[in-house]
Length: 158
Image 1 (cartoon, rainbow, N blue to C red):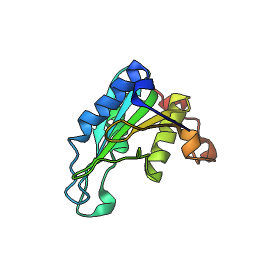
Image 2 (image 1 turned 90 degrees about the horizontal axis):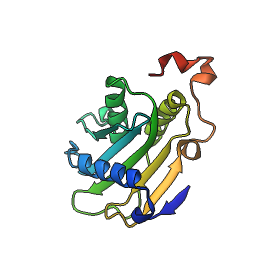
Image 3 (image 1 turned 135 degrees about the vertical axis):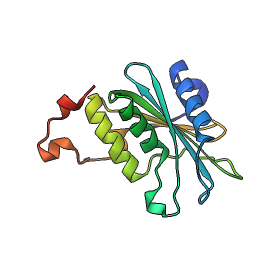
Image 4 (image 1 turned 90 degrees about the vertical axis):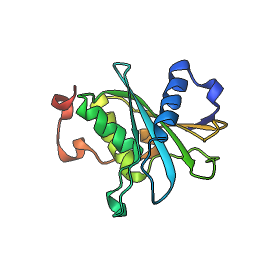
């Protein structure tokens, strides 16, 4: 895990954060008023985005990371390189980078297995003054996945 600055990111990483910032403004968040955007960099170099979508039945809400992963899957994209996340409150800037919730970490781990890569997650504070970079294996230690069920997922890669 590393704390860095926006300026120290590569050009493609800065672009990914910018895409997460753009899509976060499309969040449907009448309950939390918390805006989250996620941008995935596919191994094909395509960028796939998603924003959080809330529901009156709170448990049915979809996080931005899962929205982006579902969209990627619908596009037949399952091999990823990186994930960027950007957040803000309705009336405040988020000073510390927000990392994925536990459910999203599990979803990202599953796609890391499909990608045959320890996916990197880059999260930015609202004003970009602080960037947190971590791999999914750092965020989800001793993860449960397809191998624990004796499943070879290589035939599901695209």
